[in-house]
Image (cartoon, rainbow, N blue to C red; front, top):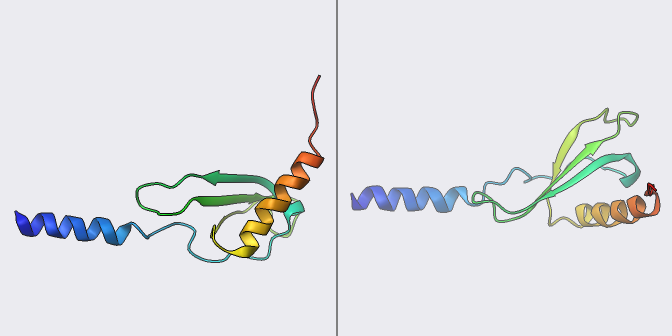
Length: 93
């Protein structure tokens, strides 16, 4: 029984670092992004996840990418995308 508990503890700690967004995606311009989603941390990942869905007119044709949240390029993309979206927001009356 003790060995089983030890094994489960080890597996839990080893899977804690398996995130979906572990590698750098392609070079993405903020104007080519159709949708940006920032998902919170979950039990199997120590970091938040950033998903981008590309515009259909771009060279990516609507693909979805998961970007590593700690990379400088990802942080810049999120920052500029939010600025650009706020600037081009359409307010409905």
